[in-house]
Length: 252
Image 1 (tube, rainbow, N blue to C red):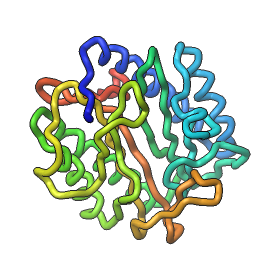
Image 2 (image 1 turned 45 degrees about the vertical axis):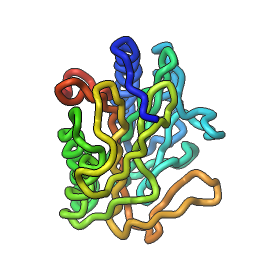
Image 3 (image 1 turned 180 degrees about the vertical axis):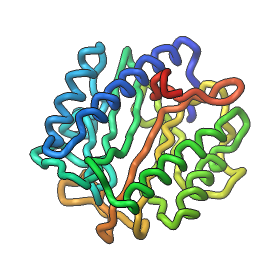
């Protein structure tokens, strides 16, 4: 069942989204050669808790950290730890915060210093696919029209859409219905309604679309070792369009 949120619930979710967005701003400034993924995790957790929220991911199904920190060929769910970032790396940081019973969730892929032209294009295209999908969100649009937009942008650029992992609804639970793939035929799926809150999250590989999970049962990497990107926003369906809950006002 897809749960539509009331105006009062959306007000709380805006605050959860703000906390996530502010945490990403801290991450963007902190990502640089020489920093460890554990240091990033500690920074994120400290800020989230300073805002009266708790990290959504910590302890979720046994996940041990406050952020997912996935480097280079790691797509999602990477564990923060002693790994040091190097010039030319990329890191996908997924952040969730629960505030007054509701979650916000957003992921972004950051460059560590200067990266190759191909890797920069991967990030640019993945971000473009996120916003291409969001721009289609409004009442009565069918969900897979949004999914199709991601696939169109990504595949037109020669990259691959991961199919094993999808976006999702969000609210009192971190993961709610509906599941939102990043591929599909337009004009299919449930119709969007005001009050739905969706996590749109393209996951894109430079190489083939196939991925596998490492022995830690969490970290997902590309099967062929190619680098990959992950972008995500929490988005509410409004009466006349959409509202991105995990974007700071000055960025809108």
